[in-house]
Length: 512
Image (cartoon, rainbow, N blue to C red):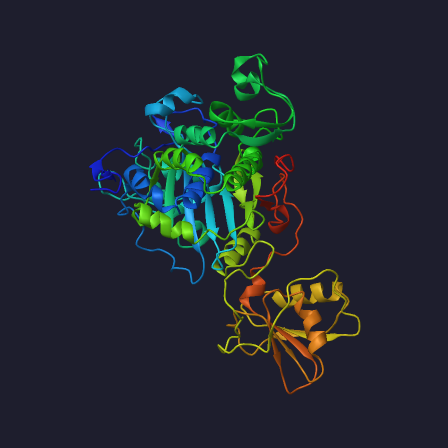
């Protein structure tokens, strides 16, 4: 029996609230405009608020799980550092969702999703939005009758959730697709619906948001043929319930009017909601209705299927502050009406997460000291990237200790730009280095420290030979290099485009 055939809620079989996209009754449904912000909001906040022991029994009774027998047998290896949570937004109109508008029919779909990475140091988190129209490879997925599909190439990302054409969706297929796309092992998967999202925004007393212009009914539904009444005024305001849903669904008339264009507003919304919840503290009168609304509208994998499991994961996030909670979008460009992935930017992003490096290149693995490839601690860990770096009068040799082509030239360009003199570039004797190592001769430690500012996380090691050399590891390959924006408006400068949860809610509200 397939993974969607049985779901459990407090040991009682119930249907998973799911969603699908694509063909229904031989006809393609109109795309709905339900946001993935509900997904991000519900998962992050449930994990944050579940840490109170007094919520245990209440949460345990709400949690619904889906089976895992639809997961691929060919999965990436478990990560050595942080953990990954896939959050899928369901827009099913079944049950209480039918009152919220935006579409018809019980069969819904996953508009967009995101991958939440909690870093090994327990002090950083990053969410990567995955646009619904992104063209990806969908690996074999399990159908309700137990058979498996053939792989699909050039398919839209959100169609993975529709495989099997059931109201509950196919979260295992979406997880398989994300693991194939990223090379990262997904530790947990969460499916959320927007009825609970609406209740949750009310439970917290509303969420501060911002609009770059006045918004009318016609902006929510361009088929009405007239502007209609004013829904939102330009500027800051607080929304909850249906108005919160309208805000995160809105796309026409702002930016380029696309689904991907509204992702930044959704990220801003979630940032603001997280900030609101944190500002209220561990207040039982606020947390209980919030937790009830969240858990009652989510379906999780068995690994998060009880209050104690949620509690354990929540405790891993308790020290993450707002500034260290980052939101980015998978590097993209338009390809006709669809979205194509920009390489190698996306590859660098996944490598950075795998290495527990933040989008701005910091080592967030939580290790007390960096180690070289021989397993021994270096003489000094490199300092973080400082302000201006001056390399005047400092000569450096650069060696590529990886199989990544052009890495030494990239490092040489960065050194030259900072005023260093690069004495030469070459391939290192070994090409399996994971960490960048900066070797320095007697009396050159200060100069080596200046070099290290360009290589966050590098190990400094004193050598008997004179001079300074840099042997590049995979850690340097994962650091995003500056690049121009790709055609079609997409961003390839991942680190520079990140939003922090403490950013101004009125800033940077749309692509396009």
